[in-house]
Length: 238
Image (cartoon, rainbow, N blue to C red; front, side, top):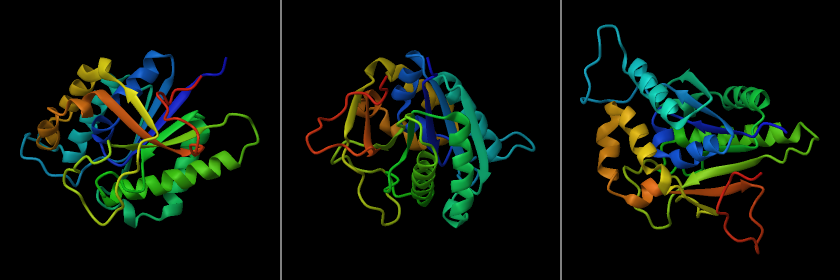
């Protein structure tokens, strides 16, 4: 039986923990292998919540925090690139796309997760990694004639939810086509978030939102949902 694999592509350390922790851990618990990629080390962020050690950069610290969260989630493969935090929009798109295609070829995922075109918050890095991942997925899928039928999902939020710290002029988040109960992993999400102590000011005010902790939502970008197809309750299809 072929190994079932999932790949999640993000822009920064902590995107994974603000994102669909429950689904990633559920995949692991169902025998899937999960890969997580962060395009930057989050080195342009700011935090007065931690004291850096001599010679330690914020990027060093945030990568350590990401590795902590990945271990809690049960990620089998973690890749951290060193593109400039806050500068993904300025990276040649073909560079990102080519590297992502190499990752897809190596991992051969059945499911790929990333941000939608909105980046949820409109963050330019989120928008850039969404566009690059979508194009890489399309090219990778087209280069093979096998029957793997991979799927591409955009992480999204509940309709009408107020977006914290919106940035830029991105469109609103896409409506969910998959709604997944991950309440059994609420503690896992809390633990993953706690790894990102340097960013506590961003996530601490959100942890009273039980819906955010217990429900994952996705928009299926490929294959698109048919007009008469009901919303999915899983993205981990056998």
